[in-house]
Image (tube, rainbow, N blue to C red; front, top):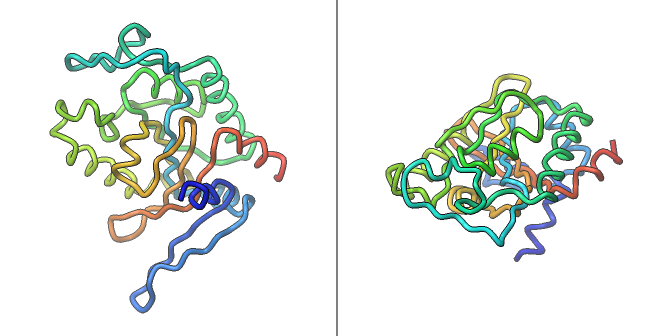
Length: 211
């Protein structure tokens, strides 16, 4: 199953729905994905880049997630920080327009977004880590707000970048992204969204080379 899903890493899956037909997937090429993103209209959901798994979250009260202390909350690794810089550089070099940039308030997600250097980063609890669900109305409430955000159109001619967590994506979408992976969603006209592509952190140099 994992291998079949990973095929999308270098592709673009568009689900087309009409009253007369069921959803039909169309697999496009790497450059088709880049060209689509250049036209705007997508939400790019990034799981934060790689972290130091020798650390762990100690969430005892509200706002503990804001801590950048590795003794309290898991932080980015140095390779992860380098990936965030490289991802942002690739997005700029590929001329992919970015408007709104949102991040979960966790230190590791905010740092990921800022290291990309794509513009002003705004924190939001719409894509809060599910481990903090009790502070935000429970798991179902977080899933609902995340899905509503992914269904929301970005500003015309731009894409919205969202940096959050793997568990939110797993619960709210068809995918469970790896650290640093970007998952592209297309909002539809019915309050929903469709998976249209996946880009791992190591894929970006290849996309630049194809352009």
